[in-house]
Structure formats: structure tokens, C-alpha cells
Image 1 (cartoon, helix red, strand yellow):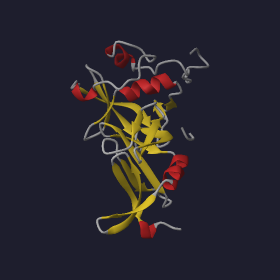
Image 2 (spheres, one colour; image 1 turned 90 degrees about the horizontal axis):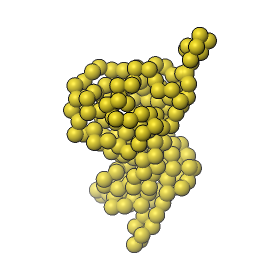
Image 3 (cartoon, one colour; image 1 turned 180 degrees about the vertical axis):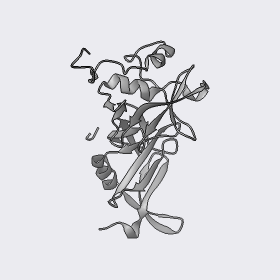
Image 4 (cartoon, one colour; image 1 turned 45 degrees about the vertical axis):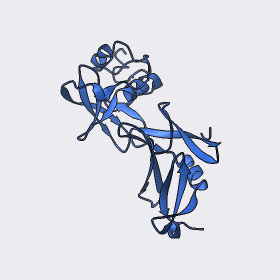
Amino acid sequence: MQHGADGSRAAGRATADASPPGLERLFASLGGTAGGPATPRPVERWNPPYCGDIDMRVAADGTWFYSGTPIRRPALVKLFASILRKDPERYVLVTPVECVGIHVADVPFLAVEMAVTEAGGARTLHFRTNVDDVVAAGSDHPLRFATAEDGGLMPYVHVRGGLWARLTRALTHDLVALGEERMMGGANQFGVASGDAFFVMAPASEVSE
């Protein structure tokens, strides 16, 4: 892999291991606690009533917040990630009995590591996210590219069910280093191959030497 809040004085401070107040219903409905498994749940098959939004957000840097306080416990973040779903109107946390909305600034995950494998002359790019999903880029997990405010490249990889991970700046540099030019639709394009697909980053003419 490459690159890889108690007592009077502490009333306003969340401890690293405490579950955010008001979320016990979510844990109870999952039959577990914040330390439970992080494997994605079958949220696409759950259709509980929508119960409104809660004060939870995912910042653009991938940090999860509850009531304005960062959630520092990785197991807790992974639990929330395992019940996250992208609906047409919003991002929601879903259990068999409850559905609540949260705010996501950009996308919910970051791709923090990349591995490159070669087999039969074909290259595959594997990505690990900050919540430990591992996906292989290809037609099932495509890459897409956006332009940052500073004009830089912002690559994303699809994780599951409309949930995407943005590559870190370090991984973006590594990805660009793997790029090549190919004729696509009668035009010379710069992109990267992975698995059964070639993902165009930009017209080759726009790529500086």
C-alpha cells in the first residue's frame, strides 16, 4: 500500500469512547453497540420511517461530527459508515426501524491508500478508505474526476450504493503518475486504466508536460 466529550467541568466535553447522546436508539436497533462490526448493512433493503435530521455531519476532510464535536473513536465512525445510505434527497443513517438525515460536505469517505496489481498484462488499482472499505477500481467501482477551486484535479472512487471516496492529495499525485494517453472517441485523452476500464482525467492537450 502507498501513503498511504462527564461532571461539572467536563459537561461540555465528549469523551473519545462515549457514544454521542441521543444515538442509543440507533445502536439498540442494530442489536449492538458502537464497538460492533463495521461491515456494511443491507440498508438498501430497509425502509423504516424518516425521523428527520440529526446534528451530524461529515466534513470535507472526512471527519465525522456530532453536535459540533468530532467523533474521535474509529469504531464509532465505522458503525455509522456501515449504515449510511445515499437517497435522492439526502444522506441518511438507516436501521430496520429508523432513518435519520445527516449532512455531508462533499462525499462521506476518503481514499487513503492505493495498491497496484498486475495480472495478464492488465493493471488494477485497489483503494482503502478511511473506514476500511477496500475496492478495486473498474466498471463496478468507477473513478470520476472533478476540478478543485484552485484548478487542481479531484479524483473520486465509487465505494457502494452512490457513496464515493475522494482520493487524498498524495494519492492524487500517485494516480496522475500512472496516467497515459489513449485515443477515445476520436480524441487523444489522458487517463488511467484499472481493471476493465479506462478513466479519462482530461484531454491530453490540457495536460502539461
